[in-house]
Length: 98
Image (cartoon, rainbow, N blue to C red; front, side):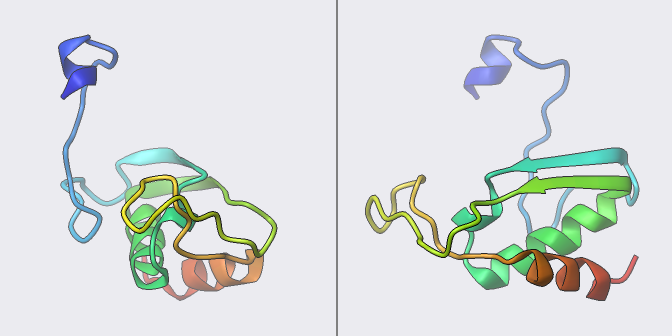
């Protein structure tokens, strides 16, 4: 991993959204800036559930406000795969158990 090689961070954890290698409430705050729109809705819901599970106080999340998805190509990392409303995000976080 490039960041590990350059020692950009003190610690790095490699994980998968379906099973994060973290204990519940490992962090006070989670920050997810412009992430969720790059996931299909089903993975986005799983992402929110996992995020809530590992966070004890607050989740700071941003996503584009407009309904237009941005398409750079099928497998391009910048392509938006979903659109989220504030209400959808809140509903997902409230429905996930923690």
